[in-house]
Image 1 (cartoon, rainbow, N blue to C red):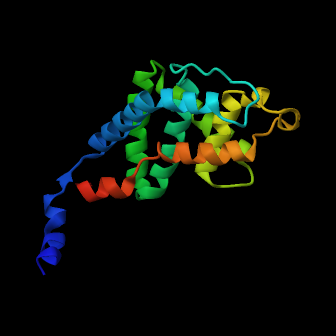
Image 2 (spheres, one colour; image 1 turned 90 degrees about the vertical axis):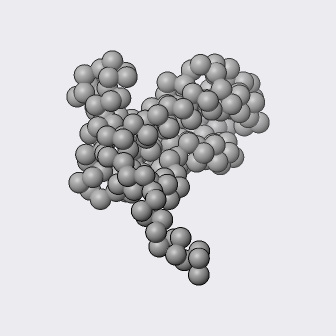
Length: 185
């Protein structure tokens, strides 16, 4: 019975966040995970058995990866919130990220939309964003050059590599369930 009472009042103990705070938490969380995790991702790619020679991705070469993670997480943001709140939070995220990337807002939005379009194109006909993010990483880092002749000629990712990359990418997707257990809007 005590557990039920606690759950009944848990919404009162959750910290309430504004849209601006949600945008800040979202951006800081993504940057933190990419900053702390990309060196390990690069090492995993460089050592993957799908490649006949190492792509030699530098631990500091996180640019494409970071943008792919941002775009993927934005797609999940849109499916997590009500449309009007998602639009408000997304706009705040765009404004803040445009400043971080030292770009005009419109130019930054265009860059994000181009990445979204690219992910959808390389992922067609699948609508699985994790799989699309993995494929986008493969293509943006031009990894087909490091595969065996069969996959290299096709300029297609080895499915075993993609499966491993899906597991990696899923670790960079925002956990909205955990977020809503701690915060309310």
